[in-house]
Length: 101
Image (cartoon, rainbow, N blue to C red; front, side, top):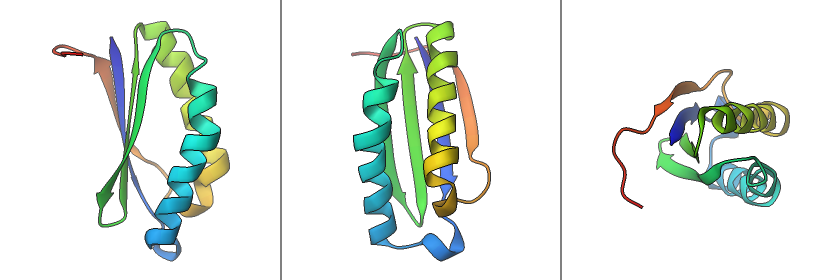
């Protein structure tokens, strides 16, 4: 399994509960159905970490699946949510070493 964790910060003009609610709605209604179609998709989570921080976690069964899914996710956040976020998220990715379903 392969996982990618992204940490986003809302832009200065986009902070507030309404913005987070809209961001979550777009992820659930627009991104999730699309990324779930990628080969090896195992899960996608978006977390409101507080203090205008959003964290997402994507999990795929294989490295190629993760690469394809991550491209979909990156494009979505860039094209559909760029006005709400600061420029670049912090991204960590790799093979899952320990897990329990």
